[in-house]
Each structure stands twice: as structure tokens, then as C-alpha cells.
Length: 169
Image (cartoon, rainbow, N blue to C red; front, side, top):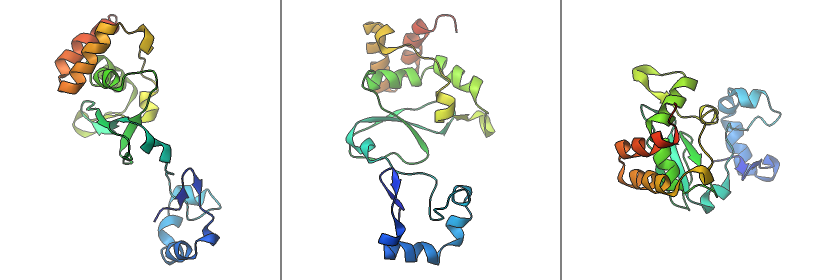
């Protein structure tokens, strides 16, 4: 039972069954730091963003040895263990190919704490530090190669195309 209606908390007094449920289990939400900092004790950490279901997404698992981006068609909502991307400028397949490349992996590794076994954290705070060229600065041939590499899950092909965009990295 989610206390969210889109990006806002529901007025819990208008939902007596929801209120009764949360009051019966009050110790769980109250133990969360986010609830302790809010007057809305039934608040959970993450709100939902229904507009995400209206567009195709590119998602990456937060914890992974190498990025393995996946396309998610509209109508599905990303799990909280996934970092999602939307873009009106990038071809998501080309962006997926770029994300699975070594040049991006090196940047992520430089900005995150490695977990057990060398696992990287592909979280939004880390990914915001990664430098990628603007889509209009990527030659059509490189974009096409990155997209093909993504669709074929061909990391070597993605690396060849990506290194052309990061010759000094």
C-alpha cells in the first residue's frame, strides 16, 4: 500500500483503510529516518513518478561489476534498485551502448566506492559525475555503432565506438 499519489503524499485522513493499515504497523514507518524527519510519519522514502510509465526507459542496475543497460518499454515502472534514463535528445540504444563501454565504466569507478568483488555503484549521484558528449557532438557512425552494440549486447563493439569519443581518457 503506497502512501503516494504520484509525486505527493495522499491526505491520509481521506483514506481511512490506509490510515488504519499504517497505524497498525506504525513502528515500521516510524523507524525510517525519512519518517523521523517529516511530520508525515507514514511517508516512505520514494515517491512514484507515473510519467515514467508513459515513455521508453533505459535502466541500469545500481550494483553491478559492469553496466548492463536494458531498454524498458513504456507501460512499465522501474524497480527501486534500478537507475533509469530518459532522453528526448539521445537515441536510447546509442546511450545504452555508451553506458556499457569501458570509458564510462572507468569514470564510474573513479567516482564511486567499489563494493565486495569489485562491484560498482551505478547510482544517480555517481552517474551525474560522468562526462559524456552532447548527442549532437557524436558522429552518426559512432552513434549507429553504439546502438548496434547495445542491441547485440556486444561490449567490445561498444568499446571501439566509445573510445573514439574519449581518445584522451
